[in-house]
Image (cartoon, rainbow, N blue to C red; front, side, top):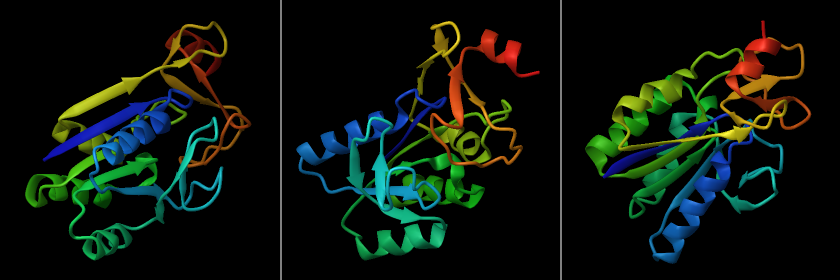
Amino acid sequence: MCLNMICGSMYSGKSTELLRRYERNKYAKRKALLFNHSLDKRYGENVVATHLQDQEKSHSISTVYQMLSILHDHKEIKNVYIDEFQFFPNEFADAVIFLVEKENYSITVAGLDLTFDNKPFKSMEKLMPYADEILKLKAVCCECGKNASKSYRLTSSKQKVEVGSNDSYIALCKKCYNKIYK
């Protein structure tokens, strides 16, 4: 089947696009499963939500075994949507590749491609060579208003993974990011 990726910075519309595709799938009367990482509780549990508060019920998971168990319980469903993919470890990328390449699943993942310190998220990076489509979305730079591709963390935390929203992150273009982040 196929692997589709939606990536970009914070506030670029990744979850909005994922939900749009999920809804389109439902209109076509195709069954689908929607997953989100259990760390993401910004707008509630067991939901994929946008910053504008659009949301759909989802399976909240943190391990590949949880996802595989749910897929096993719904063997007839071959369309899968996964939000916040950057939070999942590399074995998730391996499982997604196997499901698409060997088990005929169509999977769409959405997630940040870069960390706050401009490093690739490993799980996203691992999927890219296998993707049939990669959609790179841009946000609006909070400093100059141009296209933004960087997520800048406002807090002093150096943790690689820190779930947050507009209280913790802003989107910046490359020029403004390089000026602020030294």
